[in-house]
Amino acid sequence: MSVTSRYREAWEGFWREAPGEQGAVFWDAEPVLTVGVHLALFEPLLVDPGLPMLDLGCGNGTQTRFLADRFPRVIGADLSAAALDHARRADPAGQATYRLLDAAEKSEPEMLHAELGDVNVYMRGVLHQAAPEDRQPMVDALATLVGDRGRACLVELSEAAKPVLLDLAQSPDGPPAKLAPIFQHGIAPGEVADDAVPVYLGAAGLTVLAGGELPLTTTEYRFDGTRIELPSKWWVVGRAV
Image (cartoon, rainbow, N blue to C red; front, top):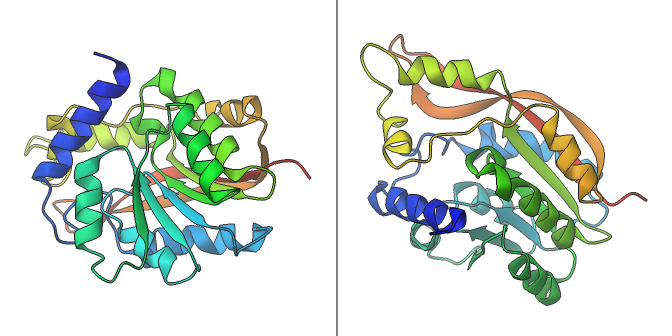
């Protein structure tokens, strides 16, 4: 079984068992606290806001629908058909469209770009959940999708998030309820070195236009009632102009 097949099956199992309501999944925080924050950094650097906006790794589509309120054409793409089922059920009006996409499979991003042309891409927390050997192909896919005029916003957990997650997972009371299913399905977040992402981007021919650090808000709380936030890094990238 290929790495991608194992990865897909893990996510299918996770999303088949995930509750349908917004906020029931660990990372499914309110858009105003997640994509809304990132969009404020991303949107001023768009060359053409009229390009299709692709939410890559859209999951149940919470962030996708927020984007669909702000851009004329928004597509949510994910490796998991079960995730897309959640997204479509939560979007009965069809604000966005949803596509099955394996970003690590070179031909699939190429076919999507042939159909849509250059796109702007929002990708939150995808690389650190992928196998190391799939990370460069995924960033290469970003380069294919943005083409000459698109821009991409990547958000990934930083190295500093690992001890926070380990502390939560190893709590004497067990991991928080919304974190436990991630580990149970074998999709525990992996570690991406802070200096690795710019290397992936450079190898794909993408230029970092802006970047920084932000806390990544989750839907879960510690036992003392404080909201769990994870250290993260963000980059806005595109072809050099």
